[in-house]
Image (cartoon, rainbow, N blue to C red; front, side, top):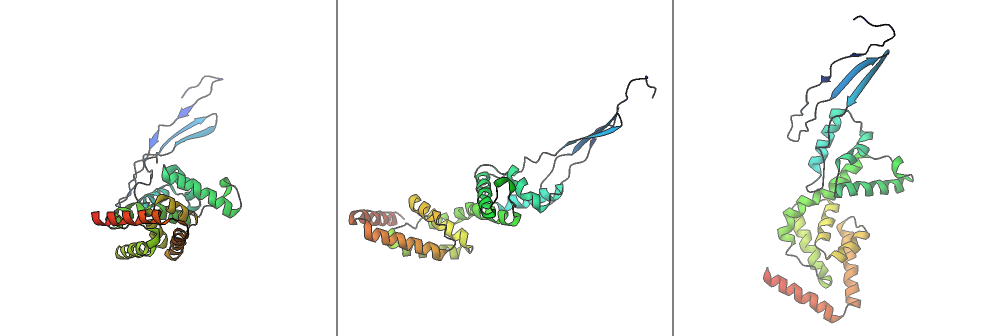
Length: 241
């Protein structure tokens, strides 16, 4: 190509678009095309990279986390993200309650590791397990609710409450300690559930001891009139069911 002295020449190659890649599984994630533009200027090669849009994969916690985690791992494999990057990358795919859970997890890990939030090392397997545990009960509770809703809590009869729920969870084949404890807490009055949750019981034995302690408090401090109100309400509810 003829040139005019004193003027530079810019050669631009056409835009190249690579085809969409689809993983053919039941939980496949489809990526958008990757576009690059290459140009040469004054002996320099400039490559403009447009990253694919992955915003379509967002988890809001309305269902269990298992399917999301599978799709996220597929996405990571497609873009070659190492396991060390997964813990920081996943925050861009969480919103609502899961996003809040992520921030709390980061804060806890910073305290445990004795460093700042921006310098922690995120163990992906640990985070994925905790996220799954935190939101797995959304589907489990819906499945158990018809039976659990019939069991009413009376602090003076906590053992009846405890063993009835335990039997339901056994029948539903729910074995994991943390999941079982969370389902107990959902059936307790909000103020009592919060008080127990602060102590973070990790299994049913610890939960049983907390319920027993509350029962003893009621026996020693609550007036008979208040206790009787609880018992009357329990009888009325049992008649309705």
